[in-house]
Image (cartoon, rainbow, N blue to C red; front, side, top):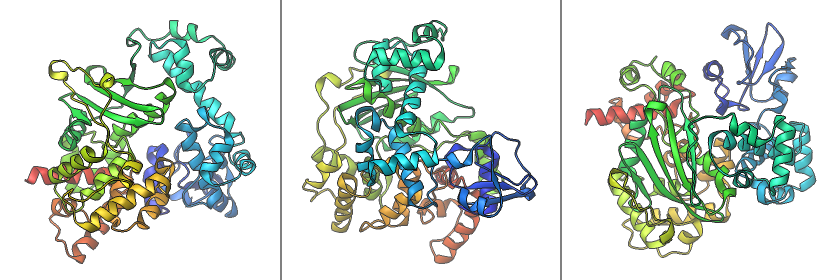
Length: 494
């Protein structure tokens, strides 16, 4: 990542996904900052880039007082202590401390309770519990302002263990009770009933949502997913039981209205994060498009289809299975085999969760994709795959069940690639594809992808691949977005 030109492109957009992956030192001020610092952007000639805050300080720069780079999320390039903090922050964001203790979190990270507290104090100046408390309050405020959930369910969804604690903490932080904030809120709060949570998500223009839905539609697994002209629905697992989501796109109001059926309000927070990742709602498309349009091969596609996003995935394990199955197989063939796997190993969706559907909004959902444990114990013969690919599928299931990928969403991109590289039958293409869609690495790049090479009229030789790698350097750090556009170009050609 520490390439000066690449870092400066990321700095220009202040993309939060690069926060902690490098630090910018400004020679004219002697100060170093995070990529997301709100200070005026320095000139390229005045910038030096470092992989860690320590490296910047060793070179004689002092920390910015506005963005406090010493508190940045842990960089994958840093030593293990900072990677531990980074993983801990991601797990807290998924609700790890809503139902568990700091000791439980430390066990998941493979460190001691006291050591984890010390790391948080050194790196963030706050305890894990304090970080979790702040996140609960800000989620609670969003739910109060944008939903009609009863306050009891808002408290549960945000991770508070009692309504009284929620009311006290909310009033102390925001200087008013939650009921007052709701009265001052929006007029378009969605209706709520006893069986579902209805939330709205906005997006920044441009956003080519029809392209994203078309991408998902061509790959949808019948019974697990359904996709219409302006909506997407699917089933999923949570630690407390199965759930479903139905998301409708409303371009007139530039929003998505998502209806989530969940076994408990406590699993709402991670579900929100997964929806945002699935639809790539946090990307700054205008800035990314401007960078990619510098390449003549991509400029026409950018002009014709602004706002292309990278389709994410709800469950990293599900996508990892589909990536293994999809090796050297067409999209249609991979979907057929994935459906066989789901039919053989996955459980049926309980009847009370199956949506009735109506008219063009019909969503036939009746099955759950199997869990890692269900695949580990299953008979996988006869799925229509070579024996080595079945072995690779089992290895992936074991890695997600109780191995290095058990907390895949909390891993930094480099750590994810390293874990995948250690599994039999998984090469660079699989690792990059999983990093691209399962954890949303914007710079992931499957450089051996046949479609990418064909889109640029490059041959499959080593020379063609070297030419592709050289050209892709100009797309960094947005190579994942360039990849999606190249797939589009290939479809246009065929």
